[in-house]
Length: 262
Image (cartoon, rainbow, N blue to C red; front, side, top):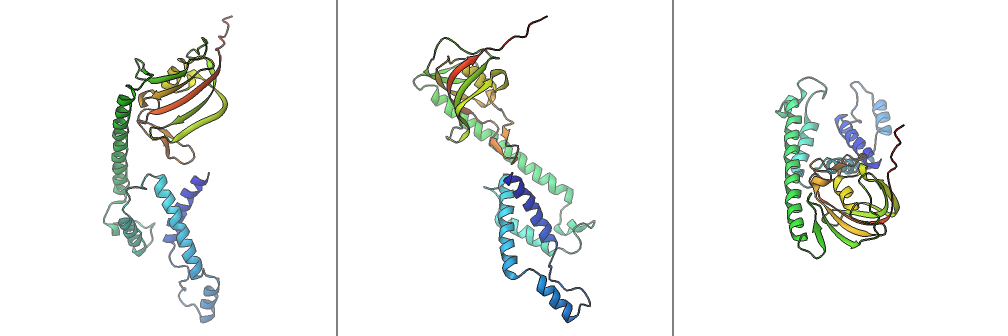
């Protein structure tokens, strides 16, 4: 939930910036009244501290929205400065005209930008996958199925193999090509195979009880172009077109119990 708090605070930062100078004296204030305002207003040290914290939170917001590697900091700061120097109330009609752009067009520009970024990610990951699978296919012990799944049996196990709707008890580790772990269970867990991605389902059916294998799952047999988002941060745990690698150890198989037709 910390990530959600970051986004909330980043939004709060914009509101604070829009509030203006809290030490500004109202018209007609007496010396005593000005002194009272000064006595309760934030100190310079507090302003500096909060400014730094707002920067951290806005930085977190940028990372979560995918701007970490390509944001132009000078233009970002210029935009903030222009906003702070703008005249009038930000809720007034025509306020954004000072920035020489239709406010509705702002969202469209950002949307087109994000669409291009997403397309680059998809192409990059596809190229990476194709190169990896082409090289991996020639390695000793690696086999390729008709669907495009690659696998390497480390220990075949016994003759009890799961069916496409059976439940498998296992330990596993899921990584990306670069070795980043996206999911892992060192304690025995279980999955109904009709509820997992196609490549994982197909691969586990190739391993008997007590067996182990490495499954090289192309994106088309995993999360495809949509990828998988973290429900708490909104960021992608698995980008679109990312292939997955699973190390699996099958402990046991529990066949699906068919309901009797009475």
